[in-house]
Amino acid sequence: MIMNDKIGEVNRKVEVVRLENITKQYPGVLALNHADLVIRSGEIHALLGENGAGKTTLMKVLYGMTVPDEGEIYIRQKQVRFSSPIEAIAAGIGMVHQHFMQADMLTVLENVIAGAEVSVRGRINYRQARRNVQEMIQQFAFDLDPDSRIEELSVGERQRVEILKVLYRGGKILIFDEPTAVLTPLETEAFFTVLRKFKEQGKSIVIITHKLQEVMAIADRITVMRDGAVTGHCEPEDVSINDLAAMMVKREIKVNQRMRAGHIGSDVYFEVKNLTLTAAGKTVLDRIHLKIHKGEILGIAGVEGNGQTELIRCLTGLQKPDEMELFLDGEAVTGNASDFISRGIGHVPEDRLGTAVVESESISINLMLGYHFKEWFRRGRWMDYKKAEAFGNECMKKYSIKAPSARTTIAEMSGGNQQKVVIARVFSENPKVVICAQPTRGVDIGSIEYIHQRMREFVGTEYAMLLISADLEEVKAMSDRIAVIYKGRIVAEGQTDAFDDTQMGLYMTGSKKGAER
Image (tube, rainbow, N blue to C red; front, side, top):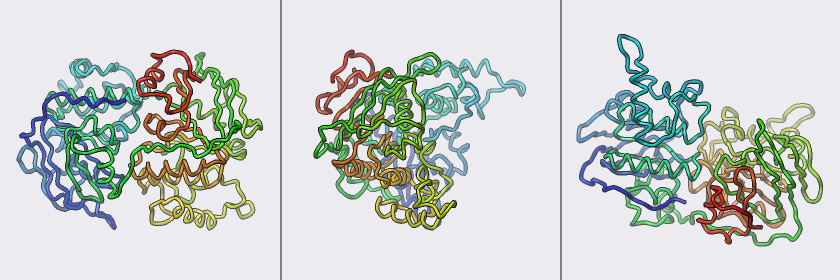
C-alpha cells in the first residue's frame, strides 16, 4: 500500500545531468538509439521500459561502466567522458545495482568503506570510518549494526548497505536499478521515505523500474524507453498507469487486470491439513490448513519472511515438516520432491536464478529439469538431446519465448523470457496443481500480462493453483480467494473481493487479530 505522497519542491530550473544522442551498438543489437535524458536537482526521476529497452545500459553509460559509441554527457553544464566508474564516482555519481555487490563474510562497516578507506600513515582509520558510517545510519534511520556480517542481513538491510556505500563516496546523483524488485511492501515504504529525504537534500535520484504503481507514487518526472530509444517524457499527474504501459510496449495493456475463475468445482481438489514446522526451537509454520477447488487460484498474501518459503518447500516435497497431511484429488501425497512431481504437483520456484534455472545451460536443458526421468527425454539409459532441443523449440513457439534458438543459454536472456522458460517447463507437463511462487518477480509489464494470462488459462476448470507472491496487487488480481499468513499462521481467509487494502495490511502486519473463513 503505497501512498502518493510527494514532499519537497522540485527545483525544475537546475539541470544536473544531460545525456544527448547516446548510442551503443553491440553485435546484432542496437542497445541505445540516440537516447536523450535530462536529470534535475532535487527530483526523483523514473526510467521506465520493458526488459531490454535500454534503461540499465543508459545508466551504465552515465556511471562509466559502458562507453557509448556516440553522444555527449554533461554534468552541471560541463561536458565529460567517463571511462570507468571511478571517474563517475569522483563526479558525484553513485549506482546501486539490482544484484548487490557485497562480500558476505565482511561486516557492514567493512563493505561500506571498501575501496574508499580513510587511512592514517598507511593504516585504515577504523575509528573515523565507524564514526562517519554511524552518523549516516542515524541520519537516515537505517537500523543497521556496523559490525553485523552481510550474510546475517535481510534483503532490505543489504540494500541499505548499498545506499551507504554510495553516500560514503559523496554521491549526489543516485541511480537505483530495480530497487524494489525483492523488497516487501513495508521495506518499499521505508526505502521511499529515504528517497524523499535525499530529494529534500537536493540530491538527484534516478529509479530504473517497471513497477508502474510505485512510479506514480514516488516519481516527479518519468522517462519511457523502448528498443533503446526514449519514446516519451511525462509527469505522473498527466498520465494513468495504463497510459504508461502503452508507452512502454506500444499497445494497450491493462495492468493487474482482475482475472476470476469461470467455474470453480464444488469438491476440494487439493487439501493441506495441520502443516506444522519447527526450526531451531521456533515454530515456523503453525497448523496450516488450506483447501483449493478445481478451477480455483488461492493466493497467499503476507509480508515476506512469515513462513512463505517454508510453506512452498513443504508443499513441493523439498522439506519434510514435523506434521502434514496432503491430499490431491482425494489421495494422500507423501515422499520427496520427485514423488510430488510424479503425483502431479508442479512448482514454479520463488528464486528464478537461485533455484529455478541453470544460467549456464540452454533453454532445452532447463526445460527438462525435474522431468528428465521421463521417457520422452531419454534414449534407453541416456538423455536424448535431439528430443530435448525439439521440445525446446516447440515450447519457444507455444510460450512466446524470445531467443535465437533452444540452444541459447539462460544467461543470455531477459528476466521475462527466463521466467517464461520456467512457466513452460511446469505448465507443459499438465500438473494437477501448481505451487506458483513469485511468478512475475523482476519481469517487465508485457511479460507480467502474458504470464498472468497463461496462469489463468492453465488452471481453467480442471486444475488448481496456490499463488504465493509478495506483490499484493498480483495476489488481488489473480486470486479467487486469499489466505493471509502472519508468523507462520493463516490469520484470515476469504473471497478476494471481501478484503480492502487497509484490512489486508492490518492482517499482514499482525495488527488485526482473528480469522475470516
